[in-house]
Structures are given as C-alpha cells and as structure tokens.
Image (tube, rainbow, N blue to C red; front, side):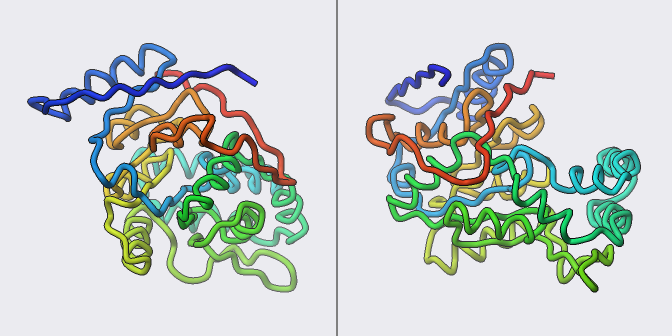
Amino acid sequence: QQARSAFQLHVSGRPKSVGTLREELFKISLQTEVDVAVQEDDLFRRNRRLILFDMDSTLIQCEVIDELAKCAGVGKQVAEITEAAMRGEIDFQESFRRRMRLLKGMDESVLQGIADNLPITEGAPRLIANLKTLGYKVGILSGGFTYFARRLQKELGIDYVHANELDFKNGKLTGEVKGTIVDAQRKAELLKSIAASEGLSLKQVIAVGDGANDIPMLKLAGLGVAFHAKPKVKEQASVGISTLGLDGILYLLGIRDHEAAATSSTILPETPVPFRSKL
C-alpha cells in the first residue's frame, strides 16, 4: 500500500479573505501532488452527521452508462452526445434521454454482469464503515441508475439512494427511465430534503462528487469535497482530494489513522484511484 501522510495545522486569527487564501493554496495543489484544505475549525467540523456521494467516478471507478454503451456497441454515439452536452448544445436531461434510447433492447443480464463487478473506489468501504460507527447517515445522489446504486447500498450499508430508475419490459431495457431525472438541481434539492428529514443543519452535511453536475450540492453542503475532479469543479468546492482514496475524507474530519478502523471488506473489487493531472 502506498505510504501517505497528513498534517493538520491550527492557525488562530482571521484572514482578510478566506476565498483568496483558498485560491492561493489551490494553485499549489495544481502544481504538486499535494492536497491542501482550509476549514474553519468550528463546532460543525466535528459534528457532521450526513455524507452524500455521487456514484459514477466517485463511489465507483467507472461511468456505468459508458460501460453499458460499450456492451451495446454504441460507445462512439454515446460519447458524441456527452460531448455535445458539455459544449452546451443540449441540456443534461435531453442528452440523458438520447443516450438512454441508444440502449433500448439491452438484456438485463448485461446489467447484472456489470453490477457484479462494479469497481468500488479505493478507501470507500473504510470511510463508510468508520462514519457509520460514528453515527453518520450515508447516501447516494446520482445521475446514474438505481439498478447499480442498490447493489452498492447492499454492499456498503448505504441509507439513502436517489438515482434514475431504468424501465424494463420482458427483461429488456425500453430506452426510457421512470420518474424525475436526477440532474444537478435535483441533487441539491435532495440534499436539502434528506438533511431536513434527519433534523440536520446543512453545515452538518458532507457532499462528495467529481463532475459539473455535482457543483450545486458541493456548494450547498457544509463540506463539499471535489474528489479527483477537474480544476473547474475543485474551484467551486470547499476542498479537493486528488491524491488519496475516499478515506482521505477522514483526515478532513480530524480523524487520525490510529483512531480509524484499518479495513472494511466487500465482495466487489476495490480499485485504486489514479492521480488526475492538472490539465
């Protein structure tokens, strides 16, 4: 296992601008393989009680819709739609529906094969096990699919799952989804709803994600963690992690290695997270 170290510095006083301080330290993190986080050491830092994860490329090390597209032989078409959405030519919901229609007729056995081999992100089992011990509630807010999120729920002990519901007919995908599509705004709404149902302040919530559609919930949470995200996402979050697995979040909560359980097992493969370059 790769050696790692974390240093916690307590500084008294108040900077002229916390935002400017974060920006300067953010520049350092882009130039070196070091994560730097600035947090106010207040009561809420030690009393967060809800953590909500994006799923694809955050809780697992793949984009499920891309894996499905490869199996269906439409990987190129799906990639083109995704790129059009990123250029702002079509919105997320329309791009999502177009990609789903390309998967029409796929047998459920294909999805089952992918679900049986979801690559869980390094450190996720350890992080969740430790937070559950401390009384945290854990949730998934995903623009992906409940079919796969439910599998993670079973494996990791997730309390809340909100994602897109696939529609099947005679054991095959219809190319449609049931209910409201979970997009960026929906994730933010769900975060507020779950926090309220648990009787928690938004400052007691941690949100973790990697993509542009996670930015609203990252900004809303008391601690928004951009996980192996691109710079534009890291700029919008409270903190960023680009050099460690998900259990690096324990450091942000002031939990030392010797205070946390060493491991937690799952039958799904635990996959190391590659360091994402500054590009």
